Image (cartoon, rainbow, N blue to C red; front, top):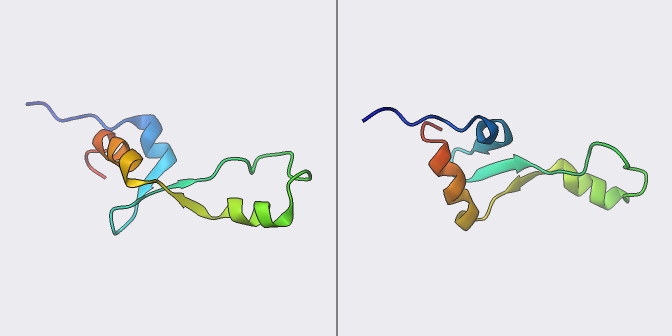
Length: 65
């Protein structure tokens, strides 16, 4: 059976942590930051963690991560 290809878009957007969770960069930090309050901008700096039901889809297309 041939090797499964890694999905290029997924490998750029998600990272598998040491414990097996899937982390990602939150959206909304590119521009128009004046209209967002400080608390929201600070929260957007943090990495997000995907819920397990969604993370299973990501790990399927990242077979060697």
